[in-house]
Length: 206
Image (cartoon, rainbow, N blue to C red):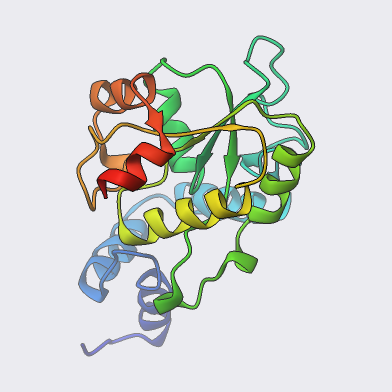
């Protein structure tokens, strides 16, 4: 792809570093921004800059937040001893949209994936294990995507908690194998949360 401007080329390159954005899509987005009023582009720049500078991660669940303890963790009406384990904030948003879950969350920040160089030490697993071992949790719900990486992560955490008295469940397989949680429709996801099954049963059927 030949560029008439180095500035344009640099902008397209940076835009194309985003997931799912190829160079042609990046070029279309950059040209769209150029056609907009300068103030609109500046609003985008300011929003991204402020996000990077001021964003926080909840000290309890590790989800993205504007404050040190997120609204969900600080809500006294949530069930404090049920914790749903998810990959990232997109899954929190997906589950919240169902209106079927009233417990808390624990955001791992990814899934174990040796192919991508991601091991247990790269995720928020240690703090989860410590939370469960401290007696704060009566039930743990695995709500990771139904992929090999998701199942590997579930099993790793399960093995870390073998000797701990805690109920461990996984969402029902209304979510198709290899499906990402964030793309599930609200009804299916809601039913999967309600009809969760003991994790040991999931191991026997896999």
